[in-house]
Amino acid sequence: MIRFLLWDVDGTLLDFKAAQKAALQRLFPVFGFGECDEEMVKRYSLINDKYWQKLERGEIDKQQCLVGRYEEFFAKEGLDPKRAAEFNERYLNALPDTIIYRDDSLEIVRSLIGKVKQYIVSNGTTVVQNRKLKESGFAELMDGVFLSEALGIEKPALAFFDKVFEELKITDKSEVMIVGDSLTSDIQGGINAGIVTCWYNPFRHPRPEGYVIDHEIADLHEIYDLL
Image (cartoon, rainbow, N blue to C red; front, side, top):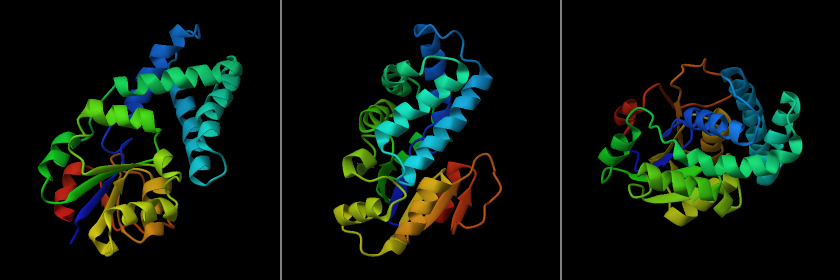
């Protein structure tokens, strides 16, 4: 029986791609970069994913991830890479301005209060995620929030989850389920931690080899059947 739900935020509870696109398209004119069209957003997204996966593997630190993604993106787009740090700071401030819920996620989380304990587990930056959670209403609904910056370790590292288990005094890992869209962060993290994994796959990507995925859902409403 699942007693503890560990929720990912970006791409799971909230539509990260929409917030990312809105922030980029709002800031490009501010920096005198012109229009950030759909193709540019797609190119940036691929670079961004690459840098976050490097962070997950421990190859770079958080600051190298956040600034490095823009240095590479700007260089490839013919923009000034020296403006990467400034752009990143403004981008992080702009991200929480766009809150779009996935699959009525706010109501789903609210409906589960008293039935299971619910916690946020995220690699997002502390300032941004705390503001997102406050603006979205999730902050007041969750039983707790675990952010990698505060813990000093990123998902999918076992040490991240060990700190969560220690804080929550969890001894039976079969009672814990992580729900997330990222195979490399959420699902691999759940595998490393020995807990139940639920892959949120709304775009119905093919199930890859090498991952022990206990459950796969395309809509967050399906979570009710797993509890």
